[in-house]
Structure formats: C-alpha cells, structure tokens
Image: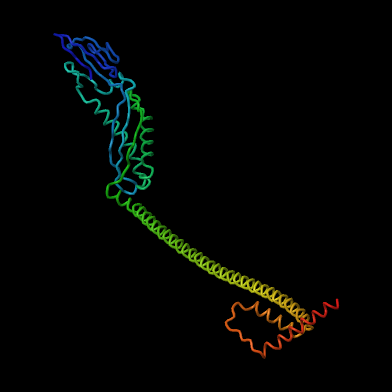
Length: 342
C-alpha cells in the first residue's frame, strides 16, 4: 500500500516497487509506473494502485459426483497483473487521497472472480465422474481442468490478468462417506496385519520346532557318540585285559620255559656230576678191588678220620684189634719182601 504524507495543501505519495501507481489529473493519466514518488494536489488528482507481485487466492467449494455423493475440492490459484492500466480500467483500484487505502475492495473482487471461474470449471468434471474415480484421480484432473480453463479464458486476458499456476490439494467426500470407503481397505489392511501376525507366529513356532528338533538331534548325536565312546572304552578295556592276559600267558610260558630250561640244565649238570662222581667212584672202587683187606681197613679208617670232627668214645677190643694188627703185620712183611727182592 502506498504511503501518503501531508504538507499544508500538498500531498506526497511514495509507492513500493511491487505496486503500479496511476496518477490522474483532471481525468487524464499524467503518471504511470512502479515504485513512484511524487507531489500532487488533492483537489485535482485521483490515484490508483495496482499490485504487480504474484497473488494467491485459495478456494474451497462443494459439488456432487455423478453417483450423487457430496465432494469437496480445495486448492489455490496463483496469478499476477500483466497489464495494470487495463486492469485499472476494469476493476476500481482507487486510493483515498488522505490515507492511501483502497476506496473499494478490488482484491476481494478478483478473489471472487477467480473462485467462481475455478468452481465453474471444476463442477463440470466433478458432476460427470463417480466418487471412486474422483478419489483416485480427482486432484490431478481438477487441477488440470482449472489451469487450462483459466489460462485459455479470454476475459482474464482482456482484463490484464495472467494465471501463474493452479494447485489442488484435496478432493474428498464427506466424513461419513470417507469412513465407509476406507472401511474395506482398513479391513484389508487389518486382515493383512493379522495374516502377517499369524505368519510371524507360525514362523516363530516353526523356528522353535526347528530349534527343538536341532536340540533333540544334538542330544541323539551326543548319545550316539557317548555310546560309541562307552563301546570303545569297553573294547579298549577288553583289549587291554586280553593283552594283559596274553602278556601274562607269554610271561608264564616264558618263565615256565626258563624253569624247564633251568631244570633241564640243572638235571644235565647233576647228571654229569653224578656220572663224573660215579665214574670216579667206579674207578676208585676198581682201584680198591685188588687191595688186601687190611689196606681197605686202613683206607676206611683214614676216610672215617677225615669225616669225623670229634670222637666221643672209642672201643678197641681184642677181637676187633687182633685181626687188624695181623693184617698190618702181614702187609709190612710183604713190603719188606718186595724191598729185598728189588
């Protein structure tokens, strides 16, 4: 909005860069431009200010679909003034010379104009389309219908207006109908969620069963290995026992063989000794066979004396000593005879 200052009977106007000001004096246009600042006399001047920036006009209107269902369309129209002087001729943008405010409501008039145009363009599509199709593709269809209709509208071009863009944010039924339409999908989603829950539970049960089977299989495998270990330990003990028995048997056989060999050696030794003694004794007896009795008695007495360590009692009777002395004397005489002959 333009700013107006008062100096006695003069006025000074200063406009923003995005405002196009038109200064009329005595009914003639003397100044026209954006962001102007000038002095004027209020008695013979009239002013108009047209905004040149992009403006946005929201809209909201109700309609009925082809299947007689209430529907609401909501969006916004962006536009700008392409020819301010032409628009000022069609719409009253006059300013109060004292305050700089609009004398009328030009922006509200433009808003009403665009809302009616958009509503008229959208109604034709909404009334010929069923509600489900509107909910599926209504936003894009309404936006395109309104944009093309406003852009191609010759009246807007003649007024110096240019449509920048159209945005439709929502095409929706009534709350009750929306809930009714959402119910099947909600039920489907809930069913899918339930199925997912059941599937998750089934998967959990399956995993638990697999874990239990795995644990059971591990226990079975462990029991088999324990059985194999016990059997192997038993077989090892049996083998150790057999090997120990075999070793004991071999040792016993070896010891018995050694004993037999030793006994045989001892027997051979004893036999040889006995044979040697027997041969020696036989030779000695052969030597004694030709000796006289008195010599044998002498030798026997000598042998006896060598065997006895102590004589407790000695009995020399004439009957025993007589023949012995006679034998000794005979032996001595014989030796003397042999000596003389020699």
